[in-house]
Length: 152
Image (cartoon, rainbow, N blue to C red; front, side, top):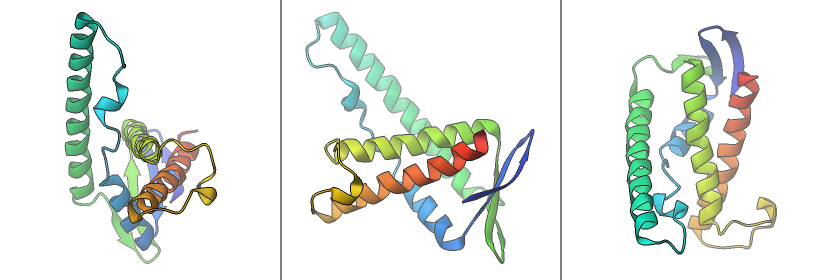
């Protein structure tokens, strides 16, 4: 993904045809972080109720983000095809929101991998699911980097 134009109203990117397929497949993994991941261990009764309310609010936010993501991906004209790939434009708010989605995918994949300290190149061999999580973590980081470069 490459930034090709930046205006006050947003940023326009060029993305290759295969890269677009991977980008959409990655975004469809959202949400990856479970709301239960944010729960504290030992809570009193009032703290537990507050925690439950927080988890409900987070779950609703994830459902809303998921709906908005599906709407964005299905929006006619969102991706305009050319011989070089596809171009698409994101407003500043959409860019920030998409960064949050990608961060959820990256961090959630890392958490599901067991929060490894080591480089992805040195992950222990494992199941296909671990390889998919490693792929999602790395790809989300790469797309985040492209969007962050545009946000500068």
